[in-house]
Image (cartoon, rainbow, N blue to C red; front, side, top):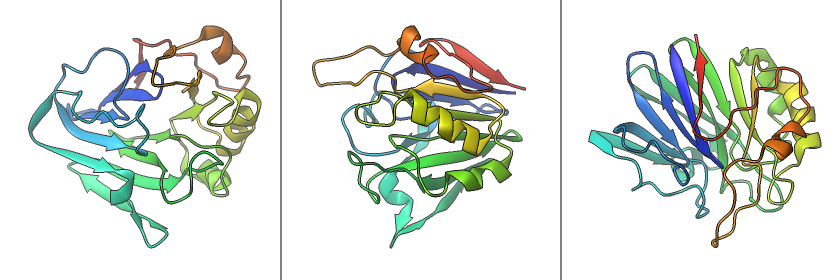
Length: 202
């Protein structure tokens, strides 16, 4: 069983079968008291990169986007039973080469965390991966809006698609979850996951 806690905005905590704890883009919300085995960062914007926020186990690994891009190639890394593959993430606000999404394979499940992006050229290829879950940004300012995200959801064909990163964030703050905005994301297999709630993949 794999559990995904949506902490708000673009922040996730994943507990894999076997107990490995993974934080992705730590920034917002609660639940950082569970010590991390792995911390992942899709890009270096302030609302994604608070790597000191989670508690850590001894030997905790921190991988940022820079660890996954080599001369334009997107790399795959493994830690224990978890495999992390970087994929394209880009738009006018996020240059290619400075941002990635992640496809995680853990506990027999595949989870796609898109990071800050709009539609990319590689998204149609994800349809062949039988994704159990996908997180797509929908803020409509720094990333694609709900309509384009729904088109991407149709391309990737994940079993569950969760809208996240739904309200533009500024250094002065912002909302970690907006139900009205989430409901504007009209995709098949949509799952609305409020901040502070957990999605279980079993």
